Image (tube, rainbow, N blue to C red; front, side, top):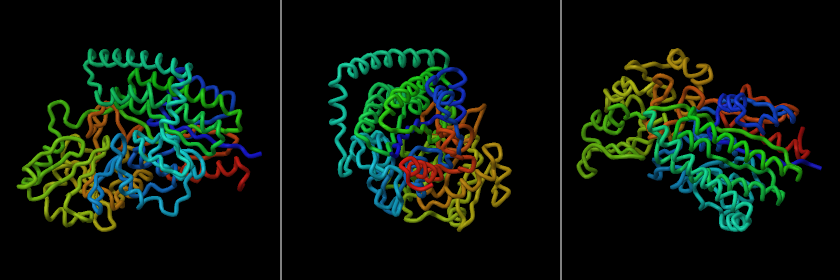
Length: 479
């Protein structure tokens, strides 16, 4: 009789963070899986951008092309595409994943960015409760009501709520007393995520297992939200891994119904510095000065320059952690590098000279153009400029792939590192989306006997065939 598969996506936990947590005893059940059940931590590279929508599309569909960041400007449909609480991906979803074979076809896909062909999502998407439109998909209320009706669940939820609120208040106060500035919006999101969505998602996974769905894919975001709020190395964030470990143990205890378990992450996190921190100016303000007469709109912030009715043009500055895409808003196609340099000859050199910017990227026909510290770099010479971020033979093709996306910005910016922290275009204490450090190196935890090899996985889309083969192997299809 075939086995079933449940895949738990632990957002934002790098391979190094996982291994540190194991060394420090913060994830005892995962350690049990390794010691007693033959699990192995496999490292892989998620690719660029190191964001959840990009990585998750690759894992679930095997195709993450044209997903250039967490949010971007769709030139053809004139819409800001973003995920999260105000997800708008549905406005462009019909242009994606054609001819793809979803990993969870016929199964359950819970708290994910995409429905991924699942028969049910249990009404829980990634911070967007509206897409439960698959044929057998239930509403979130049908999951929530029985969950809260159980006195054990209700009592556990109330206790966790009180404890979480008290702990977060203490962590926030302690961080402020030590001169650190936690990202307040993410502090609030972290509270909601941990005391409500995390528990509800775990319950939905257990329910999906009781009902026999396979494969099941579910996302848990508590660590990532907490790391955005306080930074991935903060003591309070390390505690979030204990919470994650507890949920893995709870779900694993239900494997008697014929399930095998895989745990993976999509990217890691790095400590960050706000781009506009320490007396520096916001990027939108800098751009407005470099582009006189242009109205510059930070898509998660303020607008700079003349009002719309007096502007000679508009620029959308769209941020995803340490990654920024700049779009000349009136354009229907990506502007070529030569035209860009003709129209605005000082813009790219000026941006590359900012201390907060590591790399500026543009496209000249089929050729990648990079600027670093005021100098233009092309071809193999770029490897020397990116070698301290990752293996340049791997990173350069990843950057080139992103640069080939029609949905990428006319200009793409990557935050620089200073004192081990990356300049971040958003108000976050920890971030990802860019290049360098743990954000590029997630993990996949699987049994050694399955013979999984991720040593040559240089993008999350290359995880999809590995998991698809495992799914088919467990049910007795294929080798």
